[in-house]
Image (cartoon, rainbow, N blue to C red):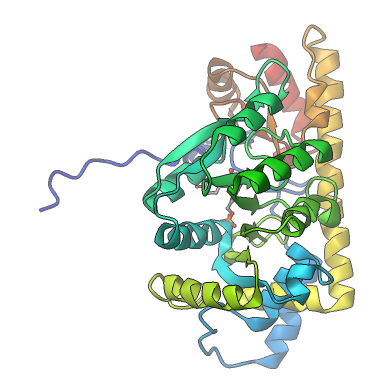
Length: 396
Ligand code: PLP
Ligand code: TYF
């Protein structure tokens, strides 16, 4: 029965980690996967998480099933974080939020929901985008197209191309947008560009789906989340997937959420009832621990303050690494200009390294990056950066 099954291709990014793990070179560096490492090269366990877990352990609460849409305290805290506690959508009960299995799970819930209620719509993702965006929406049954995004010449956004594409999409098209810290390029829209995007999306009746996996890694929690609020204020349906994998360093706990803004409280209630149906037929209800941790931190003022400080620490360290990367390359490879790396936001940089150069970094130096030239700046640290810079200068 299964003898004809073909080998599926490896995930291009997670496959890099497999190769990295198998590498025996003690000086190896993994700039492939989007994970934040501290200056000692370790994935941090945040103090706010430790404190929340201590509180939870003390309770020794029974492990009952959560509601289908997740922990109520979590959904409330996330909704207020995403839209703002004082926002009209929250106050008027036009927003719904369901706990999800990470940001990926939130995207899949949104995709499955949209496939039920907008089955003839097509999906548009940026060119390029996170690899899994296309796969997720295709697996939900959608045709997935690209809108222009990255401009390799300017190393910024091809905004005219993006806007033109938005202006030709049929009403009801689903547009996936990175709320901040674009993966993989690190190139974000300016406030003024967002204004124009929101205008076109609203005028044309497109369905915006904001993916926010890196809130707090760009300019701060508030600043990075602002675009979500601006879309919500513009009215119309709005989908938001968010993830705490990176911002709480809780990758393996799978904590994320899907929020949807509707035009009335009644519509929101009907949407939630249908979303619960999607969840029920997928995994019934989400796991409890990660949601409990995040809800505890967000709802406890001292812990929330601590989280904001720790997240700021990660953001600042990445920015320092960007500056060090550029300064050191200026010294070691003066013929090349990497100033753009400082402008890029979040964990990633589209470094401009070619596939061939990435191959040489890997084979000659045990430095792993994505073939597209994407490097995870959050994996650089004061101990490995000179080694990385020397190797890059050599392959340039
Ligand atoms: N969306 C983007 C743009 C991402 O980079 C990621 C990364 O993991 C995700 C979604 C998925 O988040 P999670 O790891 O929480 O599933
Ligand atoms: O882009 C990244 O590296 C992160 C992590 O299938 C990731 O978003 C990569 C691939 C994948 C899941 C997560």
